[in-house]
Amino acid sequence: MDQRPDNRSEIRDFLASRRAKITPDQAGLPTSGRRRVPGLRREEVAILAGVSTEWYTRLEKGHIRGVSEDVLDAVARALHLDEDERTYLFDLARAAQPPSRAPRRRKAVDFPPRVQWLLDSMTLSAAFVTNGRLDIVATNALARALFAPIFDSKTTDERHRPNFARYYFLDRDSHHFAADWDSAADTTAALLRAEAGRSPHDRALRELIGELSTVSSEFRTRWAAHNVRIHHGGVKRFHHPDAGPLELTYQPLDLPISTHEAHSLTIYTAEPGTPDEDRLKLLASWAATASGRESPPATRSGRQEGSADTRGPSR
Image (cartoon, rainbow, N blue to C red):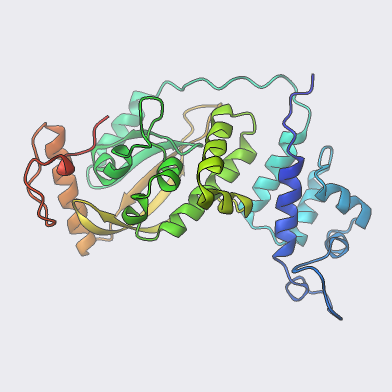
């Protein structure tokens, strides 16, 4: 029995959305007269890719099974796909192929102690590990303190580990914690879209996407855009309830600890010599104190020493 997912709608919508983004001028094509589509026509993409219009039309309808990598490369070039988008297209094509064997249900990964030791050794950087669904599966003390609002959120309960997507789209307080919420939400949805292409058999991922699509109009809008993100990093700004405003650089790194599930190690740090570094060091001091079961000092916001809001997050 063929157990590959029917991803024709994802293929159709992704290719159509990328085609709509490219103007004839960007593609180096002549223009004349009034156009009824915002971007390229199917026949124009076909010309640029060196295939027939009939063939490309069939591809854009989702019939990607059996298409060669050379042809997919040509389509990717014609649509000006970036590296992440190209990877996503190839993942969709791979998912459409008949499986050599039935996909195995994913099992929880036994987290290697050596990775936790690595995290704990980073005392002045917030370091944590996420899986492809953006669950937080391991942290050091500073990361727990930095992301205390996520750990303390009602979106985290006995059945769910802290999850960035559930927090950003289901907890209104996230709009205050993330100084640029729209950018964080865009990246989160794009990361899930890429993971859905890479792991089409992940039931937990499908359930998460279904939950977010049902409850959050903000997620539905971003999911419908079919944007993908795989390689990312940069700067994020937070309004931390204890440390105040923080501008931190971050960089995710692939962490190959399982052959069945993707994991990423992400490190947040502050630019040396800045007020952000001072605030991050202060937060690190509080995190170390909290791990010793002592209360941190009163914060600038006027909270009393030992109040519930100033304690490090707990699980």
